[in-house]
Image 1: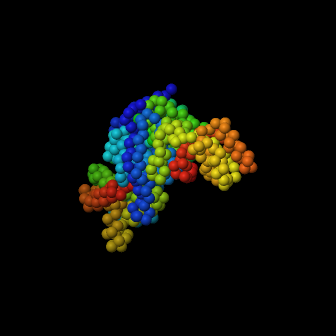
Image 2 (image 1 turned 45 degrees about the vertical axis):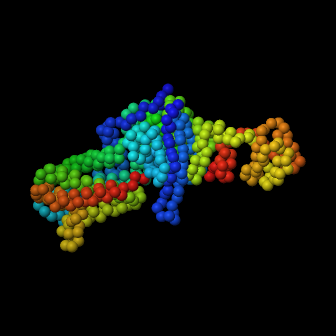
Image 3 (image 1 turned 30 degrees about the vertical axis):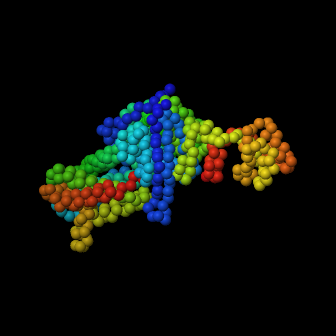
Length: 254
Length: 313
């Protein structure tokens, strides 16, 4: 017979973090809509636009040399922003965040685990997209550390915005808005359509978007072999500070 | 029994809404002490303030006034120390929509230092049959049992169950009660909210009746039902009978009231003579007393006496 005699205690925080990260990642990878967003769409766009001459790319190298950095940026946005916003919005709606709030897991550890889950997913995305791009003849240039810095700051910026949305809007509104923003930024953020196609005034506004900074920064390093893209890193850092601060201030757990 | 109370609430006030017009006072000066090692039912109609009170104990709500101590700790400022020691079952939800029952329970166990054996708990609560079904596709009863399992898996000292048997079939309800009794047997304090009187009567050692944000009475079921307390004799008949002549025939100090239209209650020491008096009066008045019964006061009577309203809502 089971004894229910009390023996309370929190698990060591490292174990909780690991368990929560693994669990969140498993939930994400099981979700068909999430996989469509984070894996299928970037992959299809990469293959399609590399093979077919629909959009006019620019810069040195082959079509894939222009497209691969843009789709890496899209992958970051799909996971850190859209996917995270939708998942967290529904976790809030269904009381998951509330229930975890009464568990031994501290809130900071929950958010760290969410970040861990995003980073694991992004690593898988980057690996997959890179393999496909290399198969399509991609020849990346530049310093990998600059690429990592861009990916990390981009993740921070999009996570802040995604959590802000998930923590303030209703789950259904988050679902709709996060998808809408994903499509708008896909089209107007320099992911597959070069920003030079837009009129000058619009273009200089669009260049301030986090997705534009990320795709432009990745392109300047990977396609043109430029040094550290300080301006783009600066824009991303700005969005990260704004987004994370606003999320910390306005996020509602239930 | 541990002499230190598991929960101490003094003068708790909790309001919702900011604009004066739509401000709702959910809890209005509530005092309650909950003994350690026992099962306490917080009983009251929907909207009485039960959930708000429990959620304040769980650290979800910050009191607008008053103090709350759970295991001697402040649930808001000492949350990190308190959370590992309590088990929480919310009224609904709390599980990832895409999670399977057993993996969710296994994950919850991993957040604790000395969790119960997950497989034994799964078997005990019949969750094994949920298989690969994800949470959103489980039946209401399965979802409730999973939430209960998650509340106890960390071997807490104190468990808060918010309407744990709402919507359960009688069999699942009994299984829940059995588990709650086993918790008490092993020294766990259990606080359960309910609006079912029978649940409070059968399960709880102590009952606190809450209405309109206050505890209106508190004690063991025995005490509450004795409270004042005559035995009573009840019967149903046509509504609006004139009870004046009956009262004159009753012994000194006895009362007869129509509790709800068509339901009558005579409060007096019940003996064969009283029964004869009442049926004699009925015969004289040409009334056939239906469902004539001799019984002790129920919690519903206690509530009716105190508020003049019915407990069920």
